[in-house]
Length: 327
Length: 226
Image 1 (tube, each protein chain N blue to C red):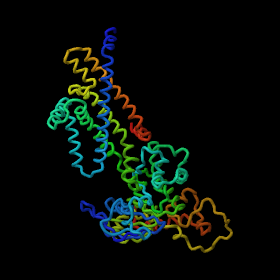
Image 2 (image 1 turned 30 degrees about the vertical axis):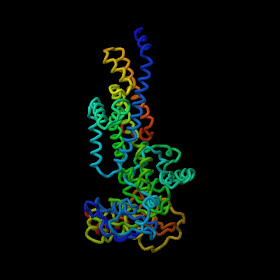
Image 3 (image 1 turned 90 degrees about the vertical axis):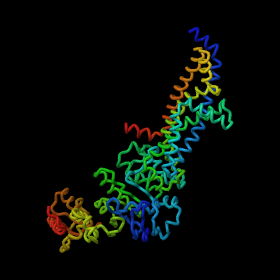
Image 4 (image 1 turned 45 degrees about the horizontal axis):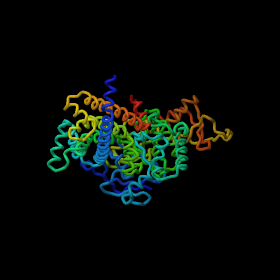
């Protein structure tokens, strides 16, 4: 859907922000651009909506060279959300969300309907939020409106530059979870910029790790953590390898072979259960909360087997040994 | 008290005409100054030449530092050289316009430039054209600052316009000059008191307009910071 072909960007002052970057982003995928500041991740993202023009190379959306499209029209089809939100302070929440639909000359009734839908989508009560001003919102609420505004005209592509970066850890995690949930309902191609490797693992279908404008590795979160492509990636993950592995490994992998299925078991799923694709850390959480020693594991609606707490702890110990975590 | 009534009976009609002339002079000069300063200010936020900005701001600032009497005299001299009328409303208005430029120009420029970068970035990123950004985002957000500039200019211009009586531009200055020449306090009072009242009145009125033009969302934001 989005193709970057040998894209480079050298700024007027000689800084090489992006060097010879090629990648393909599939439709409906969330691609995370991960890197430290100065890695070229934001520059890469801004070249997709032509806020920055590449020095060389070309970018295609659905096979069309965006360099040959009118930037204004291009941008109206691409959602855009940034860390500092940038809500228009003199406009109400509804007017902020309606900004792009208004540019596209939607009818008033269509805009009103869309604003309500979006507010509900991001978990804010339309009746009580429509007429508020940004100054009357909390940080988390502002960012929700920022996301809603980016999605307003239902663009197939959304660019997000550290959208949750300025929030406190608890609100950030909450918004990340909500956003993942939201994405499961609406199919969007997302380019998500972050410097936070945990956020990258959590949000990304794939992660492109950049350093000094060069692509170091483009891989799924599991691959990135389990098989770093080079020394830079290895060092970038560094000390956090242990926690990252607990996040990326699913309990499916550590489940004992289902020797004896228990056909007698009630077909309804018990309230405390694990999902086969839960991460080890989520499983640990669940054991803690439920206070059980054995929990059933389900894959979708099918019962897969039982996992004992001791088996989980063993697996975690194995990860600890593999990643050289000794504290 | 009786003397005041007597004074009013004698000078009342003239005070009214002179006040009308004064307001007329100030109003026309301000309209011209606002048009020039607003467009120049907007242009300066658009041009990417910081040198040009500092040169123009420097010139406007320099005009401001010239004592108003000297500026009027200077214009009379220049107009004499280039054979334009040296008395009447035209040289007076040129002086007033020049004098009123700086506060409006400076406030337009800074008012637009102080709009948060992230707001502009999002506006561009969502596909707004430069003109749409100016009218839908930058000007509404800069409006209170621009209005403050217009208010300062107005009060100054009312004061400076009193000096324009010297070059026969009419207005309340006319009464003051008469009073000074003939050492008559009744003429002096009839000129100075209305001039001072005018300045106060317009300062108050434009303060109301400023408040009224401040978008509600912006007012709430300012309240939050306070």
